[in-house]
Length: 587
Image (cartoon, rainbow, N blue to C red):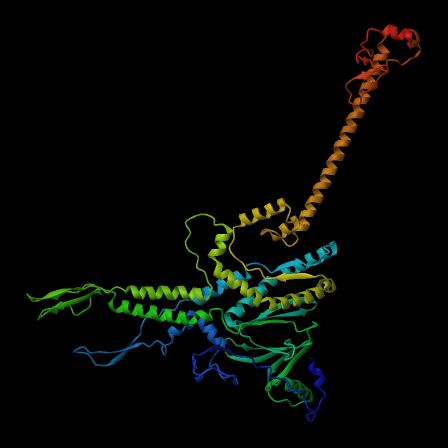
């Protein structure tokens, strides 16, 4: 929605109606009014118009969620909810005045435990990415690895955690992407950081068409200096600042843009192109509010019951001393200590202690049931104390079944906002690295994998067995391993290639050494043969330079043979045969 198209219109021109930017759907909790109060029917029911029934809802603000999260803001600490006790000084020499006695108040941070337990199971594992293309070629694999490296370099898992934490603790949250001098970055907007978020959707398609955020600047004393409104549409980023009426021509132009947004009382402070082809905002809201909403009433009841038990212990938990008998007198009017006192008793006097009152079993049962229901209603598991060693994977999943089931449900709820986060990152990081087209054309799927405590040794063994049996590839096993990096398979291939290269080099070195040894041995044997021929007596034709005794090496440098297959003595250069003269004559 480009707002500049309305900048030149005059006041007489009818402007399109734009909903107020600073409006949003409130968080509510259903009230019990109107239960089955819809009249009665006599006889068989017939067709009729639908009965008009309306839910009574109690408005709950994000400030209420902040109070529920912080134990100091719990309802038990509100003296209008849990009153202190007024007591009158009724002693004989007392003043008869009334005074206010503060009762014990105990608040417990169940909400904080629930929040981080649910976050652990939802965001404990990284977002899982897979190359969805049937043709897993080198180009797609390279783009996929570059995408995953960028996801880690830009700490997108941290963005995912902060966004989920904001939604679960304050009811909503958003991640905004931006391009700063060609570099991609992100920030998470949350009520816990002072932001109030106002998303606006197209009534027909349900797509986000405008997003606003309000925040303030404070001085060192906590006083508000300036109020701002940030707005994103599909092309521009606007920043409005609280100001007076416009007086200049430029101011009136800015005020025209303001009127489109219906943010009266603010002046346009800045406008710039955000660089994305869409609104770079990933927003998510849980209409039920904070993640502990279904346990909140039980938490309030638990804190009330525990505080009342503490008050009872304060009044009756310690032994109560009694003194009876006429004329009993305390020796020292000064309280020497809280534990030591001296009394004078008459002859018929008595002194002792009343038995202290123990908390009833019913009170203990009430507290135990309330505590159990607090965790049960929020799908939170407090692990029992285990006296054995490692548990198998199935036993761990059964133990954490409620938390795992909640995380699986949340994975579906948060899938859409993760899609938007991946879309923003893919575009922004693609612009930064000039891989935008590759990221867009490479089908990379993603999903949320809920975390559950597991036996890593068992998982590794299962992967190894599946690879050995042939129904799981080594590549998939390397990606599913808990110790794997995003480019683990490339590292494995590089190591295999290096090993093959080293094997080839070793084989070549062995052949070179063997060839050199063979050549050296052949030279030595030839020298021995030559020396033997020179020392041997020459007869007949052999004296004329015949080289009959010159043998041929076997190739291993062990023996020499003549052309008739007779073994030659390396010392003399002659054969071992006794038919030498016969051979010489016959030849």
